[in-house]
Image (cartoon, rainbow, N blue to C red; front, side):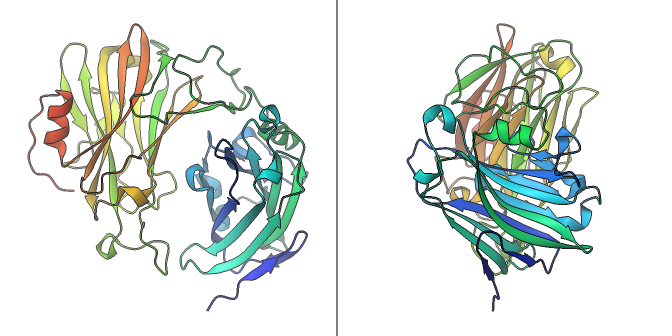
Length: 399
């Protein structure tokens, strides 16, 4: 039986565990309102020690400090036993994207709720519900987790903040570059963020077939990173994480590659084809997350220096273990490129009778990298290969 503590603004409670899930939700607003959540890891002066201590959609993980944000679910995973002593407080915030410019504020969302759960058992620890009908701000500091006598406590805040994400981040000491984001354009962004500053822009490809072109940064060092995160336990249960044999999903990130000279191949955990970042084919898969519970998910890395040698790269994912339950898996890929906003593509238009989803195509077109949302579902690798004309031969594999 849960002994959940219900708090009002200003109240606090001790945390019985250091491993938590903290979800932030809100009432029904207008469809055009977009809400983001963020966290600030603060020192004894109430400021971030570096820009790395700002957790938001473009920088969702600080794994060495035990903090992960799942932007699509507005949920934080916290392992406070990993959080360094220099961090005295973690402030959680909610902002309306471009709220100031659009005249949108929290009064239109009616209410906000912060729910704290035990990471392992899913038992509810604390809840803070705030009525926001009188809030005219577009930013809200919803709660804080803070140290008290070598323990962690949770405090309900509910304090409105004038302005959006950028002034809030600057208030906490973050060095902000570009402003807040707007809907995805179909051409390359014209003004990259100033080097060394946090980029608050993000681009979401919402519609199938929608494309965006980015500069290739030909010959430069660095990587293009493609990250996959998902919910491994789409069926509600007593605990948050279950083994695959109990209905969990092992979702694998992979790609097919084709070079300008005609070489073709693939990178995936199945068959131990993890690739190599610094040697041919200059693409590497960092790990095989069989549970979906790893804080960083799975990431493909492409060597930016060799990007001009590629003709196209097909990013896909498939369910290695578990039922095809795409409609509840909440899978999303994030593409990160140097001096560019993050590109997000969510798996939608579900086909729960298929095991494989082609997510995006990366192509070299007229000196730029074009990214196109696909989200096409297939029964297997061969069917996808034929659809995109790759020409590989496939045999049964395992891992």
